[in-house]
Image (cartoon, rainbow, N blue to C red):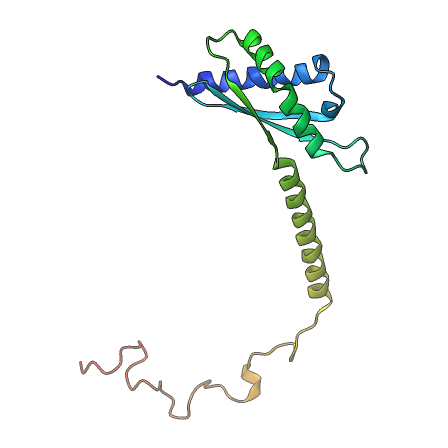
Length: 170
């Protein structure tokens, strides 16, 4: 029987083992700027997917995704043996590394929100500076001389009474 809670605990443990192994034990320079962001384990504990991001050497430098993926592919066997020793389960899960796109999507969403806020501020500024297109008071008033506000017959045009019930014949 599969236990999702156990799979979540195992995923946390695997991500911490892999992150610490990449940081301290694996000496591949291609993995110097790799950060483990999340991991997921299937309920049968046979497959683990590890999500990672890659930073550039500086803020302006573009990260080298291909080199990081090649370094992780080369280190998969060593990392799997460290996961097996660190978790103590009967079957060590297979490891699959996937580039995490959540930070890029979050950055794009922040840019869209900033653009929407700038457009809202522009519209608010234009609305504050705007004046009405016609007169200041576009509605008729009693001083205009037309106090009936309707047709010249004095009644409504439906032919019935003022309740809106058109000609029931009562």
